[in-house]
Image (cartoon, rainbow, N blue to C red; front, side, top):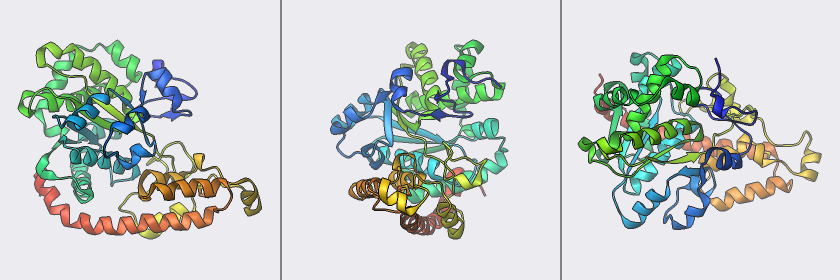
Length: 373
Ligand code: SF4
């Protein structure tokens, strides 16, 4: 199967349905027209932890949303999570981003991307429904206010499916191939469904046109570009505004791979795994450490390539000063990998324990929201 031709490179490949390679995030600014987030940070009153640390590093048209936050004007947030399993560190980031924007006043849309899970991951709908219940309990436990959010399944939301059918007339096969490479029709269909999701908050039934932020991993950028293009084509008919996006970095696999992946169980953990298994995976993680303690003391480690450091930075260390100290101590050879892993395991397990306790209380609510037995 061919890769998207316009996005193929040895060092840079964004493919929401396959492999994403990013050796240098800076290149995304030049080659894909993504804007750096940093210049907007001083205008954000209460930036999300991942924004302050450069984990959310880029955007398209985010200034519009910053203006809404500054002036207390109406905007929406929408993002989707595929119900392909229990929450892991990638989905945790997206969930936290949705919650952050909800807390900043956004009309909130949480999409359960079950059509994409079916087309991309071959997860039958009966199975994805079970995962979706757990995922919704997770996001409620993390702080999403269900009273102020529209939580829906793609497969049950007729507006989204209708939009996909309408948009299909405005997109040629050549365009889909140029964006996504040669794929089976189901993936093209699921891409159009996602455009329907992204533009859903702007339909009259949902309050009409408004700025909409879509916080996602940067591998999803092709969907955003297609959505922005389609929004323009249908502006006259629906009054759509081009959707905005923020992009987070892709967290490295614990085994040193560029991305946590279900294909390699040692590269990731879910919030549902046994504490011993999580601890074992972190203990055995690849690091940016040196082959010997002596060498590490002399030369220092390389936190830039270290997934253990990323676990702290992306999610589990609240205090920015502590993150900075870890970076400098690693560089200076004052911190050793064993010691650091032990500390990270403690943070992760403390979070997981507290989260599971809260999550249990939300299972019934999740079933109620999804209307399942
Ligand atoms: S000390 Fe920590 S940050 Fe540095 S390489 Fe080792 S595990 Fe990674």
